[in-house]
Amino acid sequence: MKESFSMKSFMAKKNEVEQKWLLVDAEGAILGRMAAKIAPILMGKNKPTYTPHVDTGDYVIVVNADKIRLSGNKANVKEYDYYTLHPGGHKYVSFEDMMEKKPEKVIELAVKRMMPKSALGRNMLKKLKVYRGPEHDNHAQKPQKIELF
Image 1 (cartoon, rainbow, N blue to C red):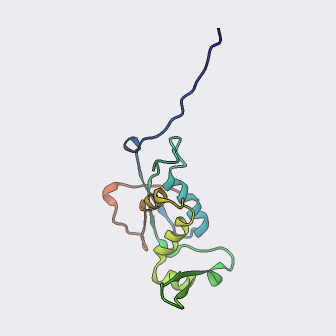
Image 2 (image 1 turned 90 degrees about the horizontal axis):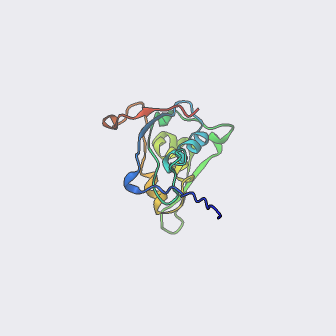
């Protein structure tokens, strides 16, 4: 008689997922390297319970967004573009201007471009909280500080 061995695959369910709050200090961090480590945390790929169709990721709070840096000459060359939906409305903003006005947006865009391009990816991105300085509004969640680099 042949003995069959079957192993069940684990699939996380939305109501069974435990999501933690993590705190990342971006001071002196290189933008792309930091974003590449934050995106898998938001997706839950750093957990053994990762399931592609369920949001198993943790919340991430990034502080000191105004103190990030870029490697090489990118700080002088990098541009962000957007479209105003008017004729001739293709606009460009340099990295330096973006860091002056909205340093939070720089990190959000870097992480957003590494997330899945779907409704689930957009919901995962809502778990990213970015703050310009060292203070944040999420003390009640008791975030755990982690070192990415």
